[in-house]
Image 1 (spheres, rainbow, N blue to C red):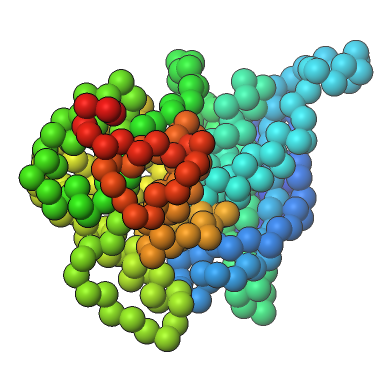
Image 2: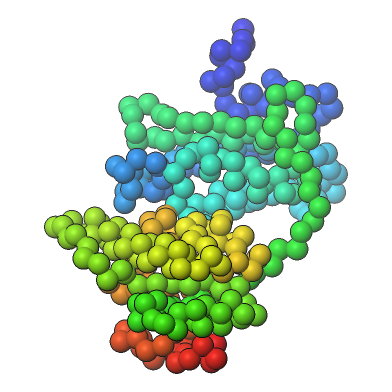
Length: 312
């Protein structure tokens, strides 16, 4: 006999069947899809991978694919796997809840998708499993959260102006002229900085030194923001994407983006221009502009040394 308690621990397929509304819906599923992932909010979960298991059931609108044997009429299983892989490759995620929500939202963009069950479990944290399950739907009703249909928005890629602003410019009398030129550029601008000139503590642990170096760059970011109200410190991909699409003059605080990156940069705060070049590639910038003379500047097709604000 099935009751609410036993149903809570059933497979997503059983839960989907038990909570089905009136009107038949077809279901497709991906079961026991397991990946090694760096995920988790605790420091002990950084720099290591753990096994994550995905079980996804997707309810789809009725179609005539079975009668016509036409693959173009069905929502492919690949759409579920691709949504999982896309979210795993975009950035490091702390919470299973966040990962599940993003997978559900991506899959439900397909007009054939009606309701989705996403269960994600960590297999290595305890002798058993730790996990979450969410249910999301394109339409409201009951206890099912709704993702409402939204007007189609053109998905376009923004190529920002990435500017490396060294300490020689940051602490110069000409800083305001540089900022005026950057702000007046046709492209949305993101400013990258080097470390503060203040002493930085050093330890015997490379990961600790790396983080302290990144935080030193962030000190400079906040210093710049205090000098000019147009400069907004940003530290996440989501905020950077919004800033680029809305023409905001942004100053990159690198810790979160670097530490959460799936493909982390080889450069660190001791090579700030190399770090800025990695950032430029990550955000599809055509090139990086270096303001004024900088000893670390190297010849590169993607590197443009700008000696005066008028050259930007």
